[in-house]
Length: 374
Ligand code: SF4
Image (cartoon, rainbow, N blue to C red; front, side, top):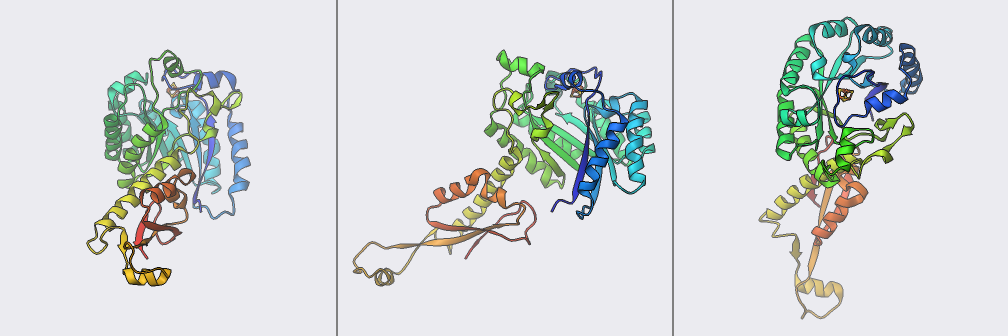
């Protein structure tokens, strides 16, 4: 069961001076009315009744959309004031916002602290200066290191968002970014494959053949390795891939307004399913390497088979399928089976000598898979 809930407040960044090639905030801002503190109150009041009584450990109000700390200080304060009121009353537990690494300084952090903010997520995207420059981010990785250090020194919880497949990016650069993220000790992370949205420079570049987005299998293959690095360091990966509700424009949800096939609605499932398949297969191969196993086909006594089948004994040795159980907890079961049961189909076809049963064992942690012989 979900233990944490986020009440998202989407605040497009009016007047953002930056020009990130993947960002459609300017187009969204032009189409949407300004969000006001009273809108923030309305959103919280709409969400709260749906969240109470569900045994949640934490409820957070989170300011997403643009770069919260890039707003004028009095606007930040007006929004924070509403959230802080709900926190004081004990109706929410945390205040959370996303921002840019170069929009962090002592004045900003002092103000956030005065309103009891808890979590600051940095849109880092990459630790590679070349990728940051090609994405038009307007800062280098040094701004990221500085911001992370300041956020830690104030005692805020740190989150880091990374993108996969920006112009000039590569597997090596993505893995480097994941390893640098671990060094920054965030407690939470998000991994976003680059989506080419309409009304962005990246869309124009793609149309002109100047940018070639990753295919979904390529994006999954890279994200999977980054996921392993982050999860292996104990970082809570709270998002992998955009949700359809993240693709909001002034005219409604617009997952159809992306270029090519850069958006996949079940991207996290694809990544976690792939990790599950690899982990399960590694265990199957070590079972196969077991000297007592003698491969997956177990020859059985010829005469007994002949007897069982009521056929004369003079026939080739028969085999009995070895029975294997693959288990996960209920939360990770769909990853074990794979998207549209692709893992189950894969194992049935790759290991025809096995009779494989997939079961739930809730004593296993999330994303832990166990292969055992019956
Ligand atoms: S991603 Fe953020 S900083 Fe970059 S243009 Fe969009 S709103 Fe501005």
